[in-house]
Length: 541
Image (cartoon, rainbow, N blue to C red; front, side):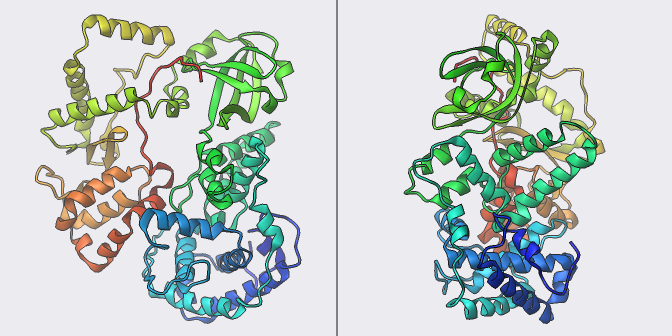
């Protein structure tokens, strides 16, 4: 978008959950222009342009005014964030002094936080600390604009109606529409989940060319993003935001929270009755009952053992169709490929993650790892040694199990019958191409994980790869790299912070005050570690 002297209505509407201008939009458009002029009139404007493009000033101005409109109209979007943050951390916001903070009103701390959030979400190449003076100085000036407008600003009643849910409407698709609205049409997540979705769609269109199924691919991607995305704010999913926005007193509040992840993959059609369609997930063997009211193509399913590809979500104890659908006749090669696909089997992992068997497996692996690694949950080594270390640990683990050879043979036979043969033992990896050294860490929530270019964040006696001059860079990589678990980051903080100069200086100490919030922000999708154990199951769900 080309930067203009003024912000125009189409720029303002880009952050709205509706397409056509309402009677209050003109007021907030004028206010957005006033905010823009306030930002640009400050000497700090040049600092903004060090981090974001000139046209992003327009977006920032609209973003801040949309927050002000949210507060005036009591649409409960930003208020949901404040409440959840307070439940998690016993304070309304991170970073800033809250001695004079008034809930359900506007505060300069809110504006400072929103500017920091916008700057670190609209771009991710540079991390901008929340304590920068240009943020708080600009926030004070912008707050003065809002404070002056507080008593006379009009309420947007249409906006408020969009973020409500009919208590009697228990249809999954109504719930999904609200989640879609919050993640992809709401100002608070405009620089986050919406822009991420737009980037994905641009790539799909660019790669898809004249693909006749392009619209279906775009719809599938949006549905997948709706169910999988975690926001940078608090690493929450759309269903969790929707539940908070409608409120804890709403009858559907627990239904939003308890809706399942989406299972997307190949199923075998096993028949149907008046209410349900029977499906078997090919890769895992798990059986499902898809409620017929959610699927308009049941009449097309005539032959048992027909293969269908679709997405399903559990809502109010029923499995609903969600996403795209296509079917094909039985194909033995496809079935074999799916049964051998660890990725496909992992699509249903979440159904087992709370099982006692999974927990016991992780606990057993942890005990054996600690025994093998002399009591330490972390091992440092040259990258070229990591593969051999893992192979030797696997042998040690297998020998430590008390199962008889007969039990092992039965387990192997079950695996052969169900098509899962595990990783190719002859496959090798040269991790030295990634970095000279790395570490192995046993994450008590997920199992063994690898990390590279972070060894100098661990000044531990058994870490011969620690280099003080690389320490700060490795700390920031450990904290900010989304592929590295929050558990490993916290292991560093809990065991090493007193020996790391970064956490002894003022800036580092201030990060520690809100470290969990920051880890959620930086790691968003992977903040919540999941077990890497994939169980084979055929239980009906």
